[in-house]
Amino acid sequence: MQEVSTGSLPGWHRVEELVRKAHARNLAHDEGVVASYIPVLAHADPERFGLCVAEADGPVHAVGDSDLEFSVQSISKAFVFALVCQAWGREVVSDRVGVNNTGLAFNSVMALELNDGHPMNPMVNAGALATTALMPGESFAEQWENLRSGLSRFAGRQLELDGEVFRSESATNTRNKAIARLLQSYGHLELDPLGVVDVYTRQCALRVSARDLAVMGATLADGGVNPVTGDQVVSGQVCQDTLAVLASTGMYERSGRWLFEIGLPAKSGVSGGIVAIAPGKGAIGTYSARLDRAGNSVRGQRATAHLSRALGLNVF
Ligand code: DON
Image (cartoon, rainbow, N blue to C red; front, side):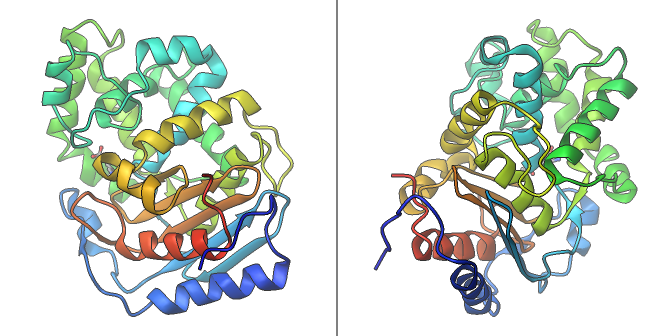
């Protein structure tokens, strides 16, 4: 039976106990397959499982492999979108990138073709490339530095590039290069497409942990203020806009089902991370490499569902 949300989380001990329970209950669950289309991701240990809740007013509850680092992959899209909205404003970004669901896979070329080359939304690869191209900076190197320092402020620590993941994806990302070229052909990418893909591939290869994801998400839950460092990373308006986009598109084609079952804006990545945000309350960060067919971590979804119910987080 779901507890009714009262506007804040239960006390520290209760949250700690529920996070431990959500981890223990799902530890032995072994459905799903580790991603391998980026070759190095196939080496991930499928047994590792991290679960962390960061509260919007500071406390952090980390269980299991919460400090194990993995590449952030698509979860970066949410935070780069927030940085770009902060820099240029919501109108520019919604006009240039879009905020609607494509209803198609994250790496779909057809979605672009069906929409006159308009990327539709920032959480699929086409829209994410268009968003990354809007990062402030005079050169790709400067854009990359701004992007890395922005995501680091969300995490409250300096995030590092995983060189092995970056090289592995750079050697195999022909489809993203094709998508960037296609965007250019429709006049939706002003910068050199391969340079944009390079910055995007770096952003996906930043190393984070489940703890980082929870703190990054809690920053969006907390009106843009990192609850651990006190740093105002983006405005409250940007958080509202980012969470709206995540609610409709953060879990790809499963976004509707996710919202129906779990009721929280969230973002997943192919390396096995998920961040789910409870506005005003905090965020859940999970890591487990086995994915379902849409590319979402199986244990991560189960543990998040468990906590959303137990903590009364469903926003509806
Ligand atoms: O561009 C890609 O394909 C990867 N760097 C990221 C994809 C991803 O995480 C999609 N997630 N479900």
